[in-house]
Image (cartoon, rainbow, N blue to C red):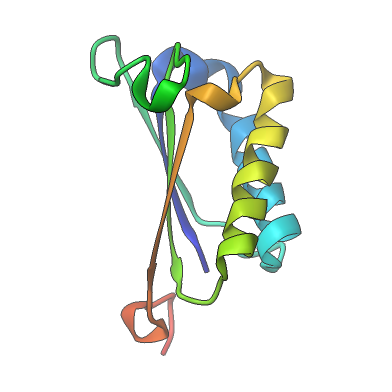
Length: 119
């Protein structure tokens, strides 16, 4: 049950939040093999000046910033995580979101660290 938090410019949120949510969820299904009904997303739009980033960090031409924070149970190998990252950016490109503007952080923990409505 990955928990997704998305930080993005308010303008991007207003224009695309539904499609971004679907893109991330579809990437989870395709790359991580989660069930279709396992969707937990929190969007946090930000006004001008609230997202700070270095436009050239890591030799990337960054023009905007869309941060996707994923918290998940530790069960994915490195190759699977990379497939997920690629699946996300591949699905965001048609929305006009450049891969260079996406930052994804996947943090893992154990099953014992989750409560999802029942024990």
